[in-house]
Image (cartoon, rainbow, N blue to C red; front, side):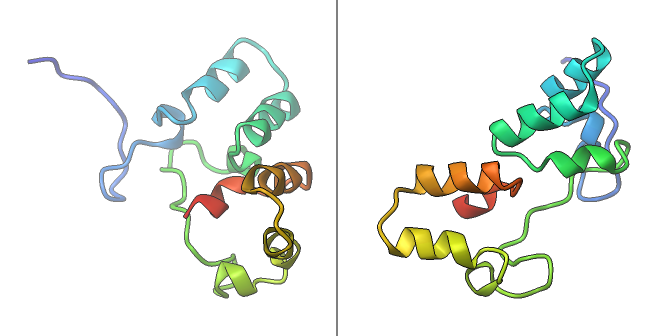
Length: 112
């Protein structure tokens, strides 16, 4: 029986951002001295929201929602209209996600 000491918040037992395995490699990059913009670029490349590093690292990562930040369904959110139009025109999902990453938008929202 191995006891693992992981900081968890009261938010459903999820690990804090700095202890979340999903973000572990980015904190390691910061620890070895990589500048924050380089780490954020790596997160964008990997389809994660780089702005999460600006928040409190002692809180769990925010849970993604199927709606845009303003409560509008993602498909109807003006910020994402361009990407849904690309899909409607027949572009592959990979190309759309690449465009989102290039525009600084978290492409993982398209997975839901």
